[in-house]
Amino acid sequence: MTPHLSVFAIASGVFVFCLSRIWRISKREKGLPPGPPTRFIFGNVTDFPKAFQRDQSAQTYGDVYSLQVFNSTFVIMASAAAVKAIMDKQGQCTGNRLKTFMATRILGQHLITENTDSRLWKTGRKAVRMFLDSDTTLARSPAYQAEFAQFLVDILDSPQNLFSHTKRTSVSLTTSFVYGKRLTVYEGSEAEKFFEAVQLLNDTLNPANHPPIDLLPVLQHVPARWTSWKGRCERVKAERNDLYGGLFRGCTESLTSETSSSSFVGCMLKNLDKLNMTVNDARSIADAFMDAGGDTSAVFILIFILAVMNNPSCQARAQAELDLLVGGDRMPTLDDLPSLPYINAVIKEVHRICPVVPFGLPHQSAHDLQYKDYIIPNGTVLVVNLWEIYHDPRLFEDPESFKPERYLNSQFGFREDIEIDIDTDGFRDNLSFGAGRRICPGESIAMATISANVMNLLWTFTFSRDESGTGNIGIDAFEPVQIGVSFKPRPFTCNVVVRDDKRQAIIRDLHAHMCAFSA
Image 1 (cartoon, rainbow, N blue to C red):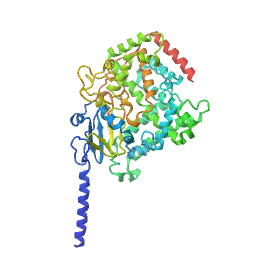
Image 2: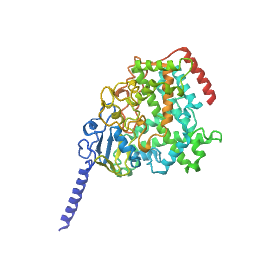
Image 3: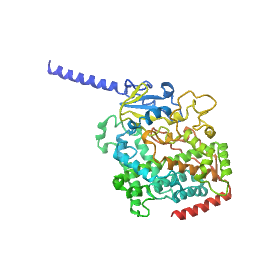
């Protein structure tokens, strides 16, 4: 064979090999759950489920189906029974997180992105259990009561700024828990900086805003001066370090033996040896709790306000129940909540109609998994489609309507007009808080704080639509949502009317007392 023919043969072999590899990209492997047909190279990149839309792939291929995106496999779960079979029963193999180059570059070592077999993750869970010794102890603390009171007074004084009041309260409740620090204003505070950093992080991680680095790892080595996305990563990282680092330093510098157990950071620093952690570990875990808690509570409260202002009869019924039990001479407390079935139903219905993170945080399988006759291979990205689960018309009558009464006669709000002939095993009230080994460790305190805020807002105010044209609860009311990201309600205004002068006086007295007590 001549040298020219040898080179041609080698080049042809390389070409055929590369072509075969490209051809296999996004091809569904045998044994996987079925799914929509794949397209050359791109696979099912356009087939991901969307909020405010029924999951057509789930209806066509079943409650567990697969998608191929470039060289990655995704399995979407669209029923609680599937979540239980895959995520809960096989939790030892489904607790890993998808690690992307961009997220790792920005977040570094982070509790939310760590796998469940990592030392940091195990240490963080142990620290949470140590600190959260009671479901509602924190929600009854002076700092939290001061937050609840200030939220109401802020709305009284400037109802037009309802949006920023809600965001300040959410972040301040989180900083009170994590660092023992309240944030009494929004503009210019760590609360405003937090939401700016969240928006910048989401924009930077949006796949549309950077090249497919995980598909083409060679792009990681492109010099920063030739890439805009590396500069954005450094900007996000710097803003987060400035914000979270400042909060952490402020907490450690003000720490005394008397206050060391009043914050999560203080508890960790006091027990470093017992927890087998370093100061850097404590900082990473604190960062994760800010990321998890600072945004989601605000989103829930804003969705709640949107729901009641668009459904005045539901709001009136909830207020009537409160007035019958509590009256107008005192504010409601968490002790009242078990005796308020309709209020509890309202809270459940808000979770159902607009789950804060509609597709959850993706997991990744650590080993091959068995589901029915299918094999879910190691490294598969696992996504729970909460939106589809909570809007399945086979389970919920008129699922697109806000109807809290559905929960009064059924624990999970299931329809009673027909016999349900699908598997409902695995349904639980806390599906929105995760599955398997990664159920949110702060679930109890989150539920206590949002329940307290819901009761307080209904007891104090009546919300109604104004003439601005804002305040819908459909798809136009929210920013486009990506998998793994929470809803972002667009700014809206509404009429906010205090229910009577006596309630206003009670709120202002409580605010003055609690703020002085917690100072």
